Length: 330
Ligand code: SF4
Image 1: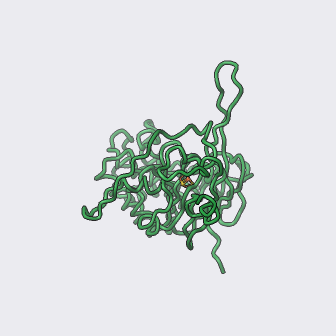
Image 2 (image 1 turned 30 degrees about the vertical axis):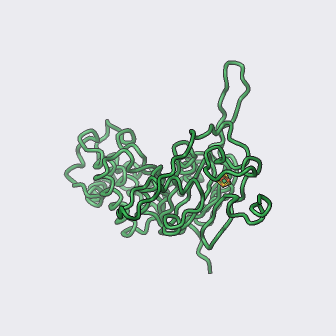
Image 3 (image 1 turned 90 degrees about the horizontal axis):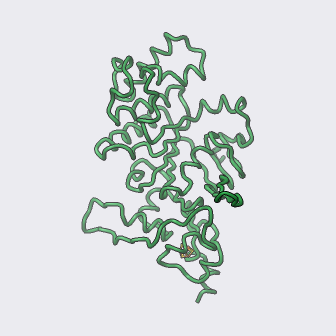
């Protein structure tokens, strides 16, 4: 029997109203525009794309920190799309977030033990003594010391603060952690330590990760599967090996061309994308990537490609892989 995914989203949408000028009519920014994916229990699914592609909004929709404008979100088979705050409370305990900026996400006036124990206060009936004990244990689990418990966040380095953020997320033993750019504010040497810690914790606690990053080189080692987003839509999803060995979408190919490879003889040719990302308030017609795509055809300007499976587990939205469209184009 097929296992129920921990997370499944179907046709997920979110738009934000943006006012144009003094008397201008309201326009809508389509941050997430009908995306679908599933995350199996115990795996790491990464969402990758340039800033503004909708990946962070997706993370907040999955955890229901934001209310979806359309589509459905399932957690362990349960439709949580329309649940109110009270109904979400027990599920929220199962889903914790680790944020990009460990400086901004930790309260400077709280002792570290209280920061780590905060979710326990909200979600459990543990006594102050029990919370304190658990907070100290969690600090040791993430590579800090129980002796750090009485200090304040500003006394720690960036990498240590991110460990504190991870300890806080772990405190209520969630099944899902949504990590939104968790290492992008850190030095490269520290990044790999935090990524290794996340991998160790995944093994230890059987965690499932939704990992959000703008950088394909960061997600390479931690991901099982990857989804590439562009202007609110998924343009390609595949398991890690297929995506890195045989990227199909021209956007994925361009992103990958800037990822350093360890073997210099296997150097990829760098693909420089022309132009900037178009505004999601007024996205291009047809394929949204057509204004920057090196392989753009006439049909791409008119008709949006369908997101379809090209080989098992490998989906792409590009006319180059649509036999019917390509027959007509020649
Ligand atoms: Fe490029 Fe056309 Fe494919 Fe879009 S559909 S990615 S414009 S080739």
